[in-house]
Image (cartoon, rainbow, N blue to C red; front, side, top):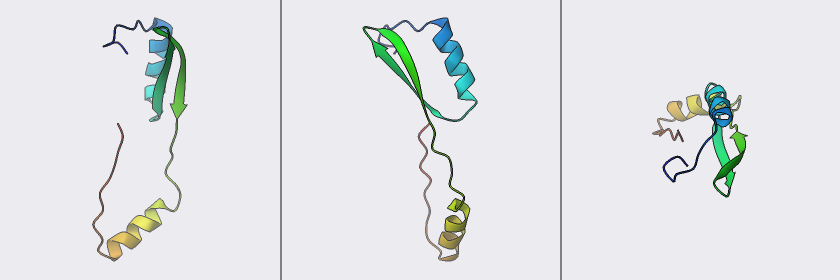
Length: 69
């Protein structure tokens, strides 16, 4: 948004800094070049994830991690 010339207020910048520590995806919503909202999306690991990974390792399957940072 900054690259497109949109001004981001200090209030929104502070919100983004506070949300950075939560390891969630943030989406800025703008209208007429004004930020009107911040969406926070969470995709927590499921409890059974470690069990599935262990089973894949035992089955000698190749695993590739996919991260959207």
